[in-house]
Image 1 (cartoon, protein in one colour):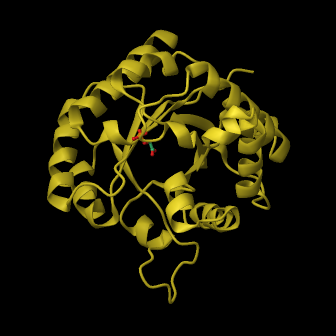
Image 2 (cartoon, rainbow, N blue to C red):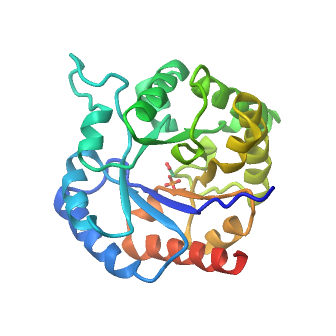
Image 3 (tube, rainbow, N blue to C red):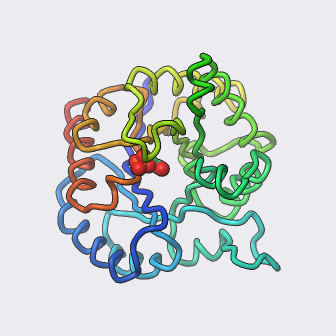
Length: 261
Ligand code: PGA
């Protein structure tokens, strides 16, 4: 059975851009991305820039999301932001389980599982990030490790609407380092993850959920990733901060996708 998964290009701005810078970027992106069809595009700014981005992108094809959220709808959690708050800003997506959150803020698999559950409950689509570090890759354990992260994040979630979940395979050693996994490496892990998802959910869900690659994606590499049937898009950090490189990535994805359809 052939599934039609719409490619997704998502920009993770991390802790960059003031509201004014974000607004300017969103305005330019809206202009430059015109006519680049067949690919879904979103940007994930830092929280304070979300309202400005939402205003600039309202009514366009480009969506926006957040980079994190708490699992509770509200409560005494100083410094945190909840799903319903993000939903009220028109966020469609939320990045969860990013390796920088796991590493610098000690996020555990169990917390990420609770966040995934909350995002789905409050109408946000999680972009669930997972990936191995270099020692695991060198020891040949990447696929098994990523399968375990997927299982930990999705355990107990019940049947998922496949349109609501995106999984981003982001090998830790490739994030912000300039080292990119080869498309073949990414395909091997994503295939293993799809198998795991079929076990956890069912074949139809596994066939329809979109799997992205992330880690030092650049305009010159996008074609080689998007040519792979298994890879449904990219999560872009550094190269999403510049409107020209981000647009070049969207264009590259749209070109390949156009040929494939
Ligand atoms: P990078 O970041 O593209 O700068 O490697 C990717 C990410 O952190 O999502």
